[in-house]
Length: 152
Image 1 (cartoon, rainbow, N blue to C red):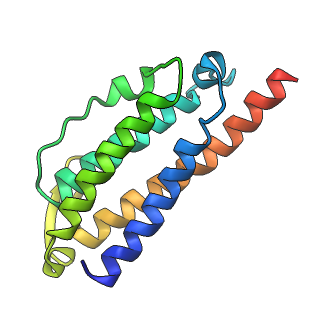
Image 2: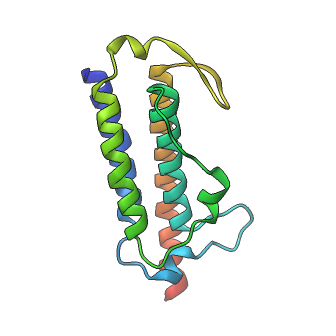
Image 3: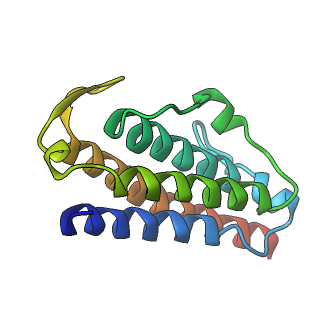
């Protein structure tokens, strides 16, 4: 794996690990609570969505591997504990590690068709995933603060 891919992987994994970590210690109500504003999502739904995005983009778009994504289900996802999303992340992380280890460096420059963004190089796909995870990392921090404030 190239140093560049390893660097992208570190940033992506760091954001996802933090997002999943923000679910620790929350009960079912807190995991599934949505702020009282249009278009908001629960902490659990955000985490599910970030994993779906990483799976589709890294495994599917970048590496050409099979993946399963149900975008609407990500936002409807609910759970009693954080364990289902933790297990999903462990499994996905292993699949991503394997796929990226086999990715030739030349794939970073090759264009491929993204399902919503048109033609992107492999490098741009990794940027999309890193940016997306970081955006939702900020959203999770704010939502977690709102959950705590709601409980006071």
